[in-house]
Length: 614
Image (cartoon, rainbow, N blue to C red; front, side, top):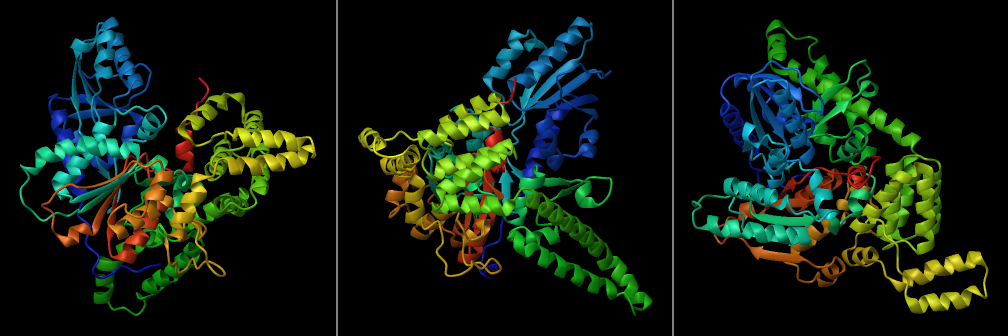
């Protein structure tokens, strides 16, 4: 693994963002003086816990906390406060509760705090249900949650579906305000690069705010220099590949939620589950998070031996030395030992699950799809995966990867695989296929008319089986794969003699076992090296253009801040991309800060597209 360059810049302290959010929430709660019960939307509970824990809320007259659910409430409190996202179903739940109170003759004060902002629809529902005059409402401008030293999340998982499937632009304003907050505290940022329709529109909105601020901002040394904005649909391949770095695997198997993970009894080797924060403060995790999984076990066993050596130092100590050891080292060693045993348990659990899922066979299929070899064999593996009913989401992931790498499936394969999937997992997934088609994740190729005529002539001369093979060949000629073209121009598939060295990797491809360099990360690397999009015209054309670069501020001339780059992922970012860019940063002496609408992976991406039974 590349070691940190001595001239690498220091990252700014983003914990100030938590303090800003906490202070504003306290101010809003105090607008309703006296004892009150607080009802919190389930998805806001984890982010809220990172900002203001129960004891802080209790200090500001919050008596009891409840999860907001669609059922009657039983509380004697005179004042109720609701903390929610601006969603129709939550507002309707609240109006039902207020109307139930009115019916029962109960008189209380109600306050709704919308996070991060209120939409017009919310007021409309309150009015329609006849409770608009009974409620006061406020906005909690909670835009940014630092999950780690270099990761900031907007915690908006719905952004992906809302925009990339529904075309709904309502969250653009939130993203703009988040960028503006970051710029006002840690800027002014000097230059922006971006690619994608969403990125372009968001920047156009942000530019108006930047122009207003440029005249009022005081002169100071900025912490952040460059911004790179990228849409999730610029690179769908990366999130659909199986993650093999430790942090990515933990997310795939255990689901990292808001920077923390819950390890069950199979990891803790006890009856209890344990919830831990995964960040740079965990010394063990900090050293293995970016490593390829094949290196993790050997590191953990070495770490265990080192810890044992440190424990053994106690032998032969006199009383004074023992006192110093207990006061200064023992607590840290015990904590490290606890984390070590949890990560060893997590590794064992990952190994068991992956062995059960024929993980190596899946990786081999993914690598074949990325390289464009043995496609027919890969289709057979996917068919077997579907027919064995291994997992509906995993099967969809492989289908989407096949479609994206081949620039759509030929009609024969599309219909056959879709039929098999619906027969295996149920007809309720029909709408999911429609969503995936609309989003461009799983599409059907439209063969050229001239070629279809040639095929019809050939079909009279050859057997049905041969026609199938010829159809595949003709269709691939009819519409050349964009991924293949992009991959060739950017060198996404590394060419190495012999085995790829995963212990001391030379490039970002290690995050996918040396088989593929994330497209999003490679694009960023090329633009940073060139300091523009010049020379990438053919690549951007294949990516449907929408690339831009512009000077934001003339006042940032500090070279140090230019080496701290904010990468904004609109629609979600994977841990594999984070690990790859951390590697690149070490290599070129830069630091990357990741600002994302949410952390994502293949399963989350496809679940957001799924239509469940009503």
